[in-house]
Amino acid sequence: MTAGTDQLLRELAPQVLGALVRRLGHFDTAEDAVQEALLAAARQWPQSGLPDDPRAWLITVAFRRMTDQLRSEQARRRREERVLAGAAADALAPPADASAAARDDTLVLLFLCCHPALTPASQVALTLRAVGGLTTAEIARAFLVPEATMGQRISRAKQRIRTSRVPFRLPPPPEREARLQAVLHVLYLVFNEGYTASAGPGLLRQDLAREAIRLARLLHRSLPDHGEVAGLLALLLLTDARSAARTTADGELVPLAEQDRSLWDRDAIAEGVALVSDALARPPPGPYQLQAAIAALHDEAATAADTDWEEIAVLYTLLERVSDNPVVRLNRAVAVAMTRGPEAGLALLDSIAEDPRLAGHHRLHAVRAHLLEMAGDRDGALAAYRTAARHTLSLPERRYLQRRAAALSGAAPP
Image (spheres, rainbow, N blue to C red):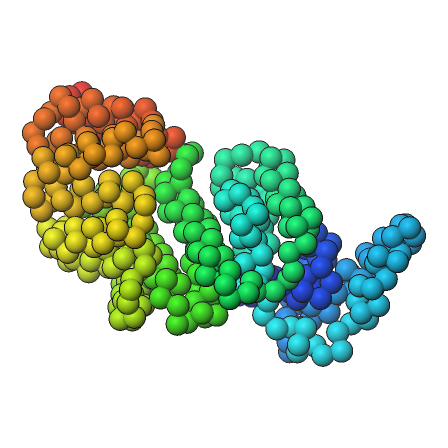
């Protein structure tokens, strides 16, 4: 199967799943039927050629697989026949209107997977499974948990949706914005795990980062006038544009100030800048738009020395007003240090050092180490780098922090 066909199947899978769930319900059964249809396409299309309407082909095959399974369940469970009869009456023949059945329900599916009844971890897992098309094993590897554990998490999420009897439709307008924020947050979490893996031997999980961008594009196509949707897509593009320069050939972390900017993806930067510029023209700005604007300032600077830290500090101040997140203040401390000196940045750090949400987080210690080094406090920076290295679970980040400590102590790097 060609890469193009594989990408097409990945894009069509959630549309087909959405069509089946909308018509028949039965999330698990629909997902199994879609997987069978995808396997059939992978076997048949290379020999027979691409159908005129690949989505309709997949829906028809998956529909038949699912109705066969429903018939089998009816035969085994006669006591449930009356319950299933209503669904079966409409379900057991192919859709009369193939074009209607083939409408893109991916957005509805995305909202369903990000239902507030689920925990954030379950929302992420179910989104990657049902909308992203990743296997349970792939998701488990990404988050460094056993496949069985991830399988249970996904199964519980489906069960929670089934028992809550959530209708397969977009939430009503009063709920839609709140639910959309959950969708955006899930995509943001998926991207962050791909861009900087929270644990493990590698810094990047590009499959996750790219999947988050693909889904953000899909969301933006569906909601082109929503500023925060555009802001999130811009943020992901502007951040991911630096990926090729973030590690050395042997996988070691390269900090932003030391990256080879000729390796940055200028097309992605141009697209991201255009998106955020358009979104910011429709005030008030939300947190994703403001983060995208900060990323754009970094990406548009020809060198690290050209970075407009004054504007970045202002944007972080605005972001702090709309986002109750201590990491925002952590980042603002760096911007303030770059404009007003390290002591001013350290004073900001002291104001959030006791925030329980940062307890044990290596980034607090890493930023403190950086600012202490800027201030000339060699011993304090050395201790903070060592503390940060002990707290991170990411091996590339740990090695980088250990190298910084070794440079200060005069010892050989680990």
